[in-house]
Image (cartoon, rainbow, N blue to C red; front, top):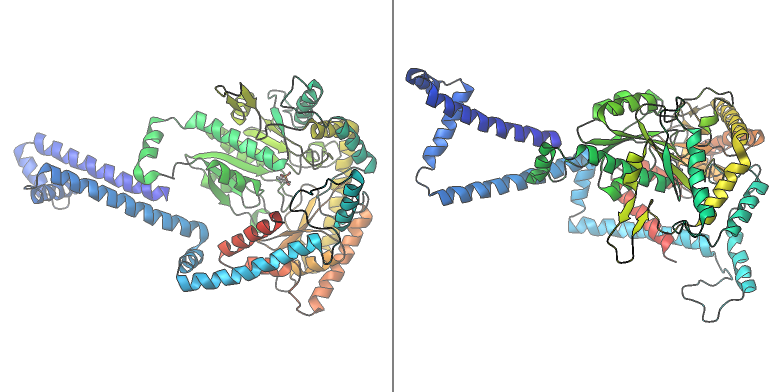
Length: 608
Ligand SMILES: *Cc1c(COP(=O)(O)O)cnc(C)c1O
């Protein structure tokens, strides 16, 4: 709606200027010419002048205080109306016409009651489902909602744990049926990290002076990671910070990028003036451009940091890639950040980092490369003998990058690395507190205290895999991915979504009406597989991990073929599993209802 605000402002300024100019002309033109000008029917300036004259004469007998009060009231009403209209049209633009109408309808008392009672039914179902998963029927372990009056002995506690975790998925280090989720190299490597972890359980990196060991590991984890994506020409020396995971890396990068951009772009006199105009309240927020395939963590960042989100839909026409052309059309004076995935979580494809980087560099916009998934894989692709897109700080415009040690860095969960092109950006990630009565304080990330144990384990993971180990891992994963693509392409009715650049392969039905891929997934789940569900378009993906083998790929393709046949001829028993939920999500125009269901699910998960 900014463009509308701009047009209205422009028109107001132009009218004012026209009036002043016409007054000036009236005063300084020779008398005849002035008379002619005054009479000019078609002349725009003359029209403006006449309109103003008419207004003057109609207000001739009013005291100035009345005119002033009327002008104030008119301005207020105009601002209020403008904001109401822009709010409604913004909502319509964002959510679509149907959704806006539905939103309005739901406010009508009778309908809202009906919606509420339907919702409650769904909530109850979700609660039952979560409760059943956790406690089962007749489970012998009582629910702990208060501290036990008498403490458990260690043995008693361990017995209880053994009963509770008997319901968990058992992790097999070889040949799992999980997509992603666990990324250990092998049992020895995972156990070794546990040993390192145990050694550092008492450490806290915020007290770097007391624990120089973990403080140095923290810094070295950054350097080792930076060395993988450094500028081949050596002109850029990236710096960074260790976080608790991919999402925190992204949140840190978004905060630093926003504030870096604001520091360089926000203090123009004109921009400040515009933000003070009453009808401009929300329209000068820094904007972030993302693909609809970008990770959910960016939407969290929009939520947390008061950014304006500009989403670009990526589909078959670009192979699910975000292209520079598409981005260029959406860049405005407020664009602060553009996100490129390397690769994207849904489809495993790279966005056009080089093209987008170039656009951004010319305009001083930050570009974050999300290599949470591709991080410890694609930097080694060339050495492993594969031709894959480049991802390093030598690419013009790339200002930050996130790489997850707890994914393909093969570390325990709980660490990730965020990197920056230079310290000028990274410093905006920090919060320094100078006047706190608790002392002088600075912390680099969202966390205060940070366990040194997870950092030590991740550091040990990188050391014991080594460069040759990562090259080997990349060769294995990319070979497996190619095998999986080949297998999937042979299944009639199935197509691979995009052209996978990394080791994550997405696929869907060629004709969604012929095969309900989410039902196929439910059938696969019954056979022990855990594939990820995608929507818009409906699909599934398998994220290959070190525990996967060529035999697993063959099994998966065979099971898929069998499950597709099962679903095709099977009865329409669509009541179980995730298929009905995705079916509903795909068909419901009202996204608020789905949002409410997600909240209900989260509440059921948090309340014991
Ligand atoms: C996993 C992932 C993230 C977020 O990582 P978490 O560690 O789950 O917070 C971000 N982006 C991409 C592309 C990912 O695959």
